[in-house]
Image: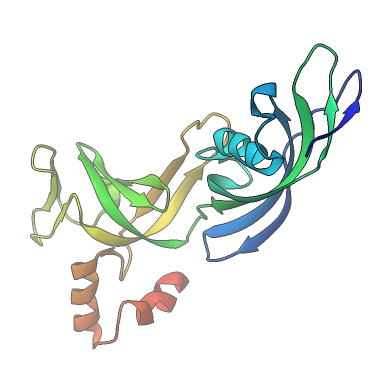
Length: 222
């Protein structure tokens, strides 16, 4: 049901953070406020469905400097009392909605999977985005990047990284500002108990047992 309040003009408030509920160190459910324009072509659709579809098109996959990566719209509460502007057939409605967001934090430990090997390092999938693991941040060894075979080879230790390898790393650089349209994240494995899963298993065995998770507190403090 649409309730319309006629006005000659309407303000367009900027989206702002209303409330955030953390569900992990990096993922959150954010409650946000905005105004959506529902076009005449969607008047036959329920107001909630129409507003939700508009919000999905506008926000999903967006990068926001304060919220990070907006992954998906979860729910929306739409004000049935809308506004109209002279000469515009659409209606404008205030909406409060929940969004699943991912915000990479400096020094946070993350799990990821290598999705691409380049001449200068590897791209690692963490959450909804890819982070750069530069060759200089893989390990203290002479490294060779073989792009054709999708592999990074260590000269002295014989260790390798390849597309599909899973690893643990620390976030060392984050850029989500306006100049970074796609966002930029840098990570490192050059610390104890970081790197490919089998490397960590070797380090744990040498250190006297335990599990990778039991060593996390030690990594966080380093």
